[in-house]
Image (cartoon, rainbow, N blue to C red; front, side, top):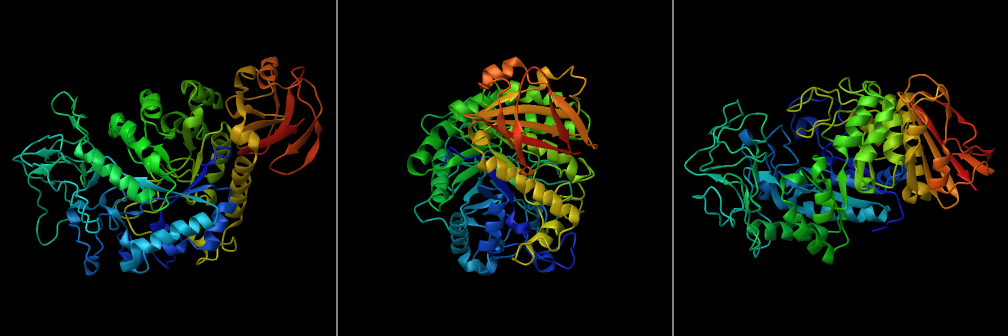
Length: 563
């Protein structure tokens, strides 16, 4: 993996991508609402995604998961409606770890070949490919019908008379049947599961609620939760070996990284064991969805993850700053709390779990999120992620299927995003069908992400926060502006983000300490380049007087000084 380039990730859900429809049906099936395919990511589309300033593309929902669609004609068992969320089903209720979602293929019988062709096209476009690894749980009716004969299926040899056994792949509730009392849609016959398996979100009850992950069952990694959480890691549990086989299978397909769903619900000991084994054979990255800051160091150092989500810190803070509920100066506490591991955190403002910036549940206006995106993208060397449609101001205000009207784009149903459909233009991406506002926003994202991708000072340089020197500065509002420096060799970048709705002229105080730490010579002439506009001039930085910057509303300036 390249280490001298900024990692810029584009998350996309193929099911929702570029699918053209004249209308949507709230609970529509494939025939009514259509579905995006692997083939939608043509050479032209991937070239345009790369041109946005992207290095990696995360194909979400690739692995076969439970669905209400019927693929029995292709030898794929049908799932019972009662244990499928939505019409398309949750991408995180894995039904077969060795197969891809048949709905994403033009020819279902050639679905794996079509996925492999997608990976090949992705690499030829100069992009690296990420897919999900869902280690904590699987669909209730998990069964691999395409695994190699020598590979034992999950649960195949479980002793279901035991609530826990280190060699079982699932947890059981002996003598109890699963009962769904919240109106889960049944078919001609009730869904039957006896003994009941434990639900994926650690629900040890035969009666999970609608708010539980009732469509999933938890995998057993050798922790006996009902007996003091005692661990049984020696000898290596059966589940560990099976998950290693699964990771090696997908890495062999040319996948470059795994985004590991709810990684903190799986013991660190497993990651400590499995990640080095995979990396011995394949050059892949591991990104963990971890929400407990107290466990960050554990999963990075002992668990060997490359990157962790920065949700609880930076995302949550930026959301409050964007909506005016917290001062921009609180951003400083985010990197301070990370205690030196900021370069190992993945920044984002949108993903499939979070509400859209432009939704009425968040900012109501995509432009308001741009200064936050500047901070996420530029404040350190760590990766940053954009969610499909974020760069177009997708609102996520459709009242679709299982998800409903919640400010998110559904992951459970056959749907698509109007803004993305207009950009996609039936496989010939351009901005002809976009509104003026969408074009402007996409151009701003493209400029920002390409700065991050191409400027060595952003991908490799040191970071120095300027907030502490401007808290009492009468010409700088720490509630609505945030400023910092990046420094690499003979280049310095001054970033000033403006969260205010009005244009502002500020004067940024750069203290003597910043010059010393960054190794900048006070008042030395430098070539100044405004990286957003390309305009150049000669300028200087000094601690003798503040540096004046004119800031556009809901935006900012990125000024590069070359000495």
